[in-house]
Each structure stands twice: as structure tokens, then as C-alpha cells.
Length: 484
Ligand code: ADP
Ligand code: MG
Image 1 (cartoon, rainbow, N blue to C red):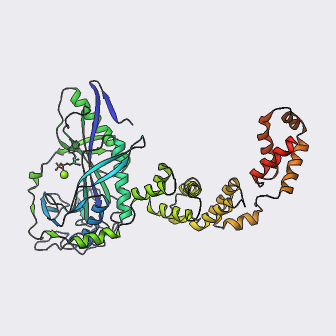
Image 2 (tube, rainbow, N blue to C red; image 1 turned 180 degrees about the horizontal axis):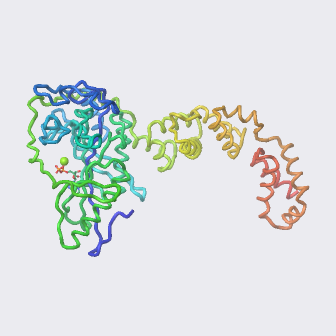
Image 3 (tube, rainbow, N blue to C red; image 1 turned 90 degrees about the horizontal axis):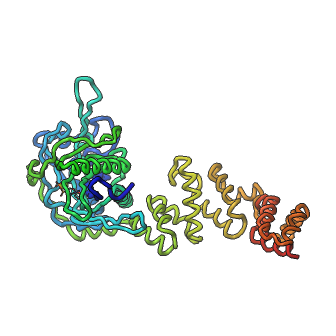
């Protein structure tokens, strides 16, 4: 995918800003005590507040605010000690109150940034405008009955964080990496599970196009994208659509659009509403939110090492490549597993084993590290057997496959199958003698100057010994004998 688009009038540039809705991990909803759990029977988790019953009063759930503060700090934002909840008024059948409680002019977090990776290995800083807290809506169900629509209010009132970026992204890949980075950060912080399929993380993409360096164009907003792949496709399609219109002499209507995955196109949903259409005003049922700096500091202290810092450390302290470090930190469980394997061992060797062998097998088995049949300790023991020359790296791969399948320990498998590497010079000499006695012609050719045959002899010796001889020792002894 290209970072720019060639039109008939020249090169166009993407301009992308993302609004990400991230469902807060909490036991109960933002303003009620009902459960925020996913997957219950319809309307099993609905209090009178969530159902918008007259006279019910919202009570703020401090646990949700704590999660928002934590997230704000994790994306390098400024937590505001004073913020305000507003009513955003609109009518929708799945919004029983007739308004959504959100934050408008004074959000709980302002500013921030996320560094993303570019294809050329450089990083780019994407600015974040704000993070605010708001209620989720319920869900209309139109496919349950031929004549009626139903509504499920389980999600009504669940706490969301809306994270709004600056229009800093310049390609679908940059947008994709921003979402992946943000997802990893909230998962590390433990504030959102990042599950896009279940809708815990949804992306609205604002897309416009311009000639490079020109004025910002009019944007369209594509709603509710629930996978990184769809996000990329929707942005690509939308930019091309806008360019076609502009190049034909038309202009872009600012509107809200939907991405039709099946047809791979965006469709108009409604003309863009302006803030004044929502008649925002401070919610009279809620006092402004005042938080103490000391409370914020306490939350900051609980944030674990975040993915970007962990990746830097893996590179600078362990000497890993940016790519390997990036793979390892993408999920915290993976990074923890790797660190347990690498503890007291060769860091790069450990990274190779975790990434190529373990992740390779886990992928094939459709498992994550939590379900790995080979524990970090067990993998560490296997690596120790390579490092102390008990087995060769080649044999170790077979041992690993066996460990993965049977759950047995490395030492037990090596013992049982007699895979110990032969380091005894006498034994190695015997194998070499046997090969040389068999290959007299080749020996003569080698001695006659055909140096390339050395590799052939190594191969023959390894084969004759079942791969169990120490390659370094074979190399030395073979050279001596052939030249002797
Ligand atoms: P609104 O209040 O109408 O939603 P915002 O200023 O909050 O507008 O912007 C919403 C999102 O649109 C932000 O993520 C912002 O980065 C993005 N955005 C603003 N202008 C443009 C533009 N010209 N092209 C692409 N994205 C834009
Ligand atoms: Mg906005």
C-alpha cells in the first residue's frame, strides 16, 4: 500500500485523524452499579439508571475514572484536576435517557502522543488531542422478529474512553500502527481489553485528502470500524472516492459514512452533525469532577513498564533487533515469558528460540503463551543444553518439537533418545575414519586441491553419527586427518 495516491492531476496525500472508543475494564457501569460484563442474556445487566427511568440519579464510578487517568498517563497526556460531564442530546431508540453523558469542553485528559513505526525504521509521533469519558449506548436488535425491533440495554451506561488523535497520520499503515500501538498500551495498563471483534475497541476514521503540504481538506468520518484491516481498507477507499470527486471539479460534503465490508466501499449515513446540534450542556445531576494531584501520582506509580519502554530496553540492554523486540513486547504475557527464558542466559539465543520455535509452534496450534505446553523454565533448560554443548542446535529443534508434543523435559528426552552430543575425540575419529575409508576417491580429489569437498565430508560425518557429533570438534579433526 502506498503512502500517497496518484490522481490525474498529480499526487495526493492522505490526512487521517482517529477517534477511538475503548471500553473501560470495570466491574460496574460508569454511573450505576449494574454489571459491565460482556455476553450476558439481553437486559440482564440493566439498572433503572441505565434504563433512563425518570428521577434516577447517576453516581460516578470512581474505578472508571481511575482507569481513564491511568490511560491518560500511559498515552503521555495531562490529567486535568477539574473536568466536567456534559449531556450530549440526541434521540436514538437504544439511548433511553435521550442524551449521552459525555465530556465536551473540559475533558479529564488533554494532550498526549503515541510514537508509531514507519516502514523505513524511523518513528513518528502522533499527537493526541484529548481523552474523555462517556457512557456507551444500548443495542437495537432488528433481526429477532419480522415485525418488531428489540433493544438490549446491557451496554447502556458502560464506561467508555474516547481517545481523539490529531490529524497527523499520512497513510492507512500509519493509522493501523497507531491503533495497534494504542491497543497494546491499554492492554498493558489493564484499562481496556482491546478486543475489537467484541466491540471493546472501535475506531472512527476521519479522512481527507490534499496536495502534499497544502491546506487541510474537508473530511468525512467513517464510523465504527472494528478491525485494523477494515480500517485500512476503509481509509483507502474513502481517499480514492474523495480524489475522484475533487478531480472531477466537485467538492466534498462533510458527512458521516459507514464502511460496507462486503462491497468494500463507504456509504453516506448522515451529513455531519456539528457540536451545536447536540445542545451540549453541563449535566445538572453531576458535580464537576475534581481530582487530587496526589491521587493521580498514586495511579502513575501503578503503571507497569509500557511497551515502548520495554522495547527500548530489550534493544539497548539485550542487544535485540527492533523487529524482534517489537514482536516480543506486542503482548505483555509474551514479553514476560521471554524475560523468564532469557534470565541468566544468552539474550539473543533466547529471543530466537521464543520467536522462531515457540511462537511458530504456538501459532500452528492456535495457542497463546498462557496455554504453552513448554514452560519458560523448560525452554530455558533446553537452551542450557545447547550452551553447554550437550546437544547441537540442530538436535535441539527435534527435542523442542518432542517437548511441545509430550510436555516432557529436555534432559529427559535427550537421555531417553540418546541424543547427547559426542565430544569424545576417539569416537569422532572413528566416525571420520569410517567415512574416509568409504570415500577414498573423494579423499584423493580433496587432497588433489578440490577444497570445496570439505563440506561434503562434514555432511557425511554428521549423517553417519546421526547429527550427534560436536560440529566444531569434527571440523578440527577432519581437517587434520585430510591434510595428514
Ligand atoms: P468534531 O468536533 O467535529 O468531531 P474534531 O476537531 O474533534 O471535530 O476532530 C475530530 C477528528 O477529526 C480528530 O481526530 C481530528 O484529528 C480529525 N480531523 C480534523 N480535521 C481533519 C481533516 N481535515 N482531515 C482529517 N481528519 C481531521
Ligand atoms: Mg470530536
